[in-house]
Image (cartoon, rainbow, N blue to C red; front, top):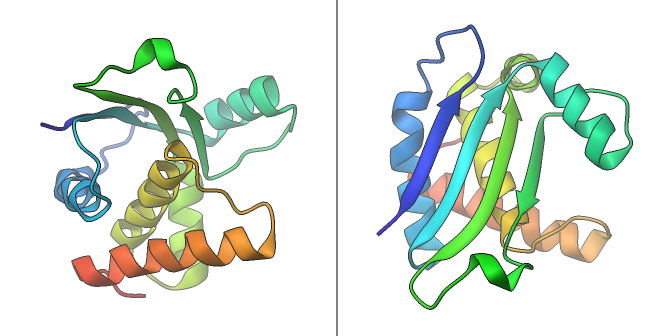
Amino acid sequence: MNNIEIFNETNEKIDEIVDLKDFIDYSVKYLKIDNPYFNIIFIDNEKIRQINKEYRNIDKETDVISFALEDDKTFNTDKFRFLGDIYISIDKAKSQAKNYGHSLKREICFLSIHGILHLLGYDHMNEEDEKIMFNLQEEILSSYGIKR
């Protein structure tokens, strides 16, 4: 059973959220994650900038920030995996979709799977790890049918 919540904390209507749940369910199955609990929260540039400054000491907006809970064993049981929260800036998603020449749906799915992989411990701090993480992201997006 997946317990994945998607929240829109912006003043905008984000139509792409409707399809996002199916992509997330697909991604969870693809990654063989049993009984995950996590949230995806859409916010604006101002809010993500505040979060980035407070938690990463970087005073600028970013596209996605993940807060993983799995390192804290008090949150997890044998039955459930409490992975954490993923914050996505809808403003950044829109501008990046335009800059990369693809749909907002693709950008939102990309940022979501990027965040999920961070919750699972993947990172891109060095070239080798980046290759592994980015290849997996593209593999999942492509197998679901989301192309550039």
